[in-house]
Image (cartoon, rainbow, N blue to C red; front, side, top):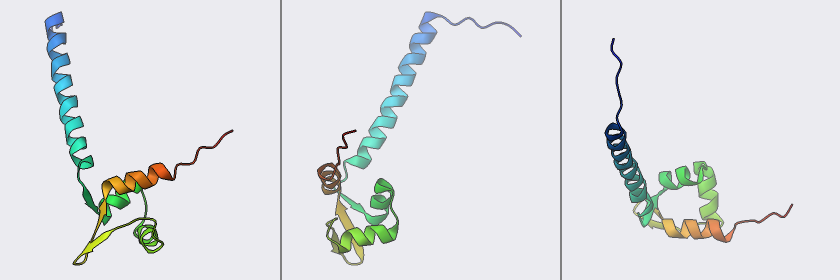
Length: 92
């Protein structure tokens, strides 16, 4: 079993490959956030809530939605705005 010598060119090539992989990951995540309308399962995952909690947010008017057929759609930007507008700043 021989020793392997790593050169600065090897490290540079590794760095470029790693950067490309990070770009792929970031681009993949940004595509999800660019969707204007998302369905109930995506909202539940985004907010980490149960189906019952999501229903309560609809019923009490906290979370606006659009219903087409039997499918509920939520505007992604409205959800973000609701989260930002209801942010609580505790002063300890």
